[in-house]
Length: 326
Image (tube, rainbow, N blue to C red; front, side, top):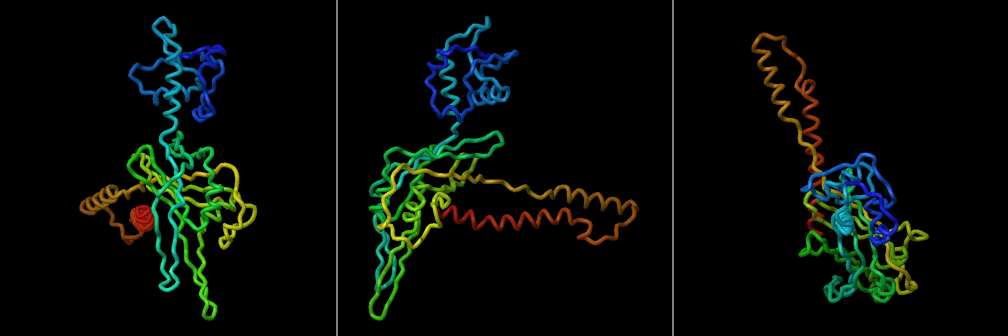
């Protein structure tokens, strides 16, 4: 692999799109004064990180005479590198089939229908930075008619179905839980069905807020939670607002994606604690000066990490169990 001085016709023939900007490939003529070679069995992610770190902008396959073998190989490399930038993606669909029946007599909620029809909403692309953190970007599907369907299905439940490219057989579902409210005036009983998410999405101009919990090491998606983006609303959203009275929102849906990665807490250094205890025991046996300090005074630096580890572990246990239920 070497650097390459490219002509304009070469750049035009690549057929690059705006998605290539995510890979930080700057297609300007540039020649590094000291070309670098890599082994033939090197992986593409290794080559990409090496050349990107060196500030190189072009990759070309050359022979021992420093002659380029074929320009089509460069196109293939760039295409594969573009794919490698997107670690994995989530295909999003939405449904408005399920609805709620509020029974006035028994005051219970019955949910009926279950994803009889779904519509494409968009895609969330997850990318990993150099620091190891993941970021997500949302790309909507054109012509989803989400605003019109939300207005027409104001009494239904808006649900999101997510399918990860690394877990094609698993469907992640996120939806709002409607509430049946009963108001009684003398002998007259009125029932009001509040479907929060639809109304808030209409008020926030179809701006979503996705929270995604992932396992970065195994590339697994644990949960997907959707909220309306309140920042996009002009005023504070009204949860009691009637969706039927809201005019249909035109335009495509948009979203902000927050990615939370599973973290491994450091384990307490019990080995160092045991070694120190053993060293003090041997010192006392050989007549060394005895330390009369209390146990907590001598070993507080080992006890505190253990206590903090147990507190944090207990605090995370309910959160992990709730994610598993979703």
